[in-house]
Image 1 (cartoon, helix red, strand yellow):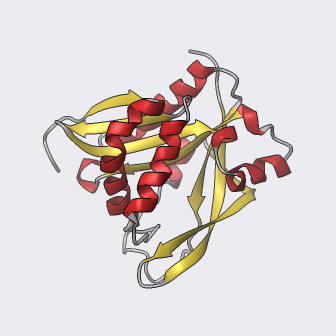
Image 2 (cartoon, one colour):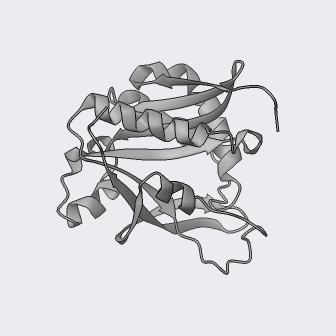
Length: 202
């Protein structure tokens, strides 16, 4: 573990553009590990992050060690996301325009366990609250079998952390997301949504 104290900076919309390549590289490095096992595609990653830069109401929480980006966490109004992300909410008669969607959080392993994950959630929830007009925050997590032989020994997932933050897994809200998996290739992955009412109090 490094002894340095990371700083956290919040950017939105076009202010993300100078950091697109750094975040793309970080995502590929972190998501190669369990549970995503993502092979990585630099062009796709930059395009994916550029969509956040195009949304003026997006948020990206960046963690720095000096000038180096060591973590990032994204969010965007669900109405600005692809229809595949919106569909599970529409099927539940939830107003898409009232949901703020949290994209992925990525953090290098040596910086974990130091409160940065909570800072990511705090900043994204504060951003959604400041924008106004949102009743719910949500994110999607990949589903993996408990007996998957690729699961690292002693691995602890984020379930306890998410529950502590007040998020609840919604078993009836699913989507499929495609990516190239290490040693497997192109696969459709089941994702389940977690949601939390957005407390509008300061």
